[in-house]
Length: 73
Image 1 (cartoon, rainbow, N blue to C red):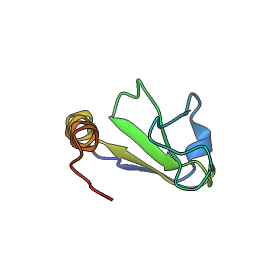
Image 2: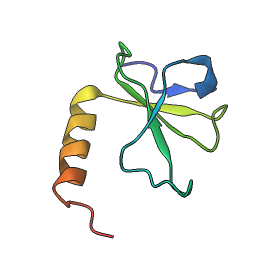
Image 3: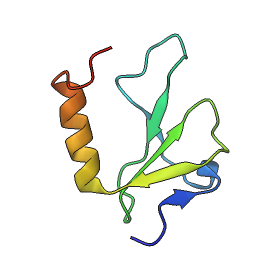
């Protein structure tokens, strides 16, 4: 993968807020499904900020670890 950063995440459409983001609007993560290069991830509080593209396999490992309590608070 040659491009792992999108300078302006607002250039892409179809973002959805992570189900792990709280309703208070604090730590909100948005992801974009169906991108050919991987899973774009951005801070929902900064929609025109950068989006990082995570390889799909690494994203899957991360989501599994979060779901199983691999990142205790």
